Image (cartoon, rainbow, N blue to C red; front, side, top):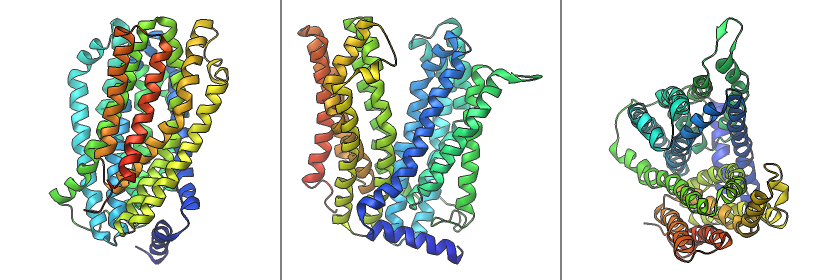
Length: 456
């Protein structure tokens, strides 16, 4: 590493260990939030482009979306967050060689999990999408998109894990620049690959997936160049490559339970959707529109959360347990304040959100009822998400996972009792969903407060 790069790396680590917490947190989180909002724009843009191909194309991609998001959440959040935490703890403890080895093991894990996703979806895709309701041309569109996307799963896994390694070294700017830059490229490339250009024929639905792979590959190459070029705290080319079971376990001990969280979260949403469907189409549509507001909060929580993972992990690695706890509560408070403010506004004036999506009075009534009840708990929802990422940094994932399980149990079991046994009104079920947010956050917060991060 050259002198300038070494100085920048040392300065970055010193800031994580000694600089004032709140300014450091905002400096780390801001580029993350911007980059993740760029990803959100891409998701909406893909819907717009594919909508021009017709309803069957939209329906087909909608079948693939939950599984593609699961892969994204696991590679960037579950395993990716564990990689960020492991690398940051090693660097915080002054173990640079261990950080290099951890990065190597992380890439091996990425290859194995990418292969599993690819084999599962290429082999079972038709069965899965048929079971989800895919039929005729919508099923064909789902398979066309899925085959390309999951056929290139390795590209997505490697680019996200490389970004996680860079974040673990305290560099939040470079991965966020990659997200923003590749999103801009995707905005230009996607319509060309979908519709064609001049004499070149488009690929239809598959073109959108191909564009995603191309832009992920571009970001991955640039991140790899940074890590192999000797410009950062992690040096991938410095040590010979070899399998290290102890380091694999260090990553998977946090990454495996963290990867279950999106499964459980999506399970809670699926359970709520299924139960709300019992109240009729208008209730389902109203809930679906209102609950979309929660997805706006995810980039905020994820942006601050990945910064918290690095900040907490670096300080835990350096033995600064109290500073790690202060960082956790500071970050959790910031995210709770932001998401809570959004929720309060939505609860007071739900039309500010709902009126953008529908003019149907019944849909608006159900959506407004949901936001008036659940919006008041959005601050707790944000707090729980922030504490989840901080727990990744501390390497303590039992209670965050327990919180996710408890939330699913509250929504699924409590909702079933309210809907099918008590035949309660929809507003009762909305209170149960809000209770799920509350239990999730308080479970993690109480565990941290009462010592689950004790040194062992």
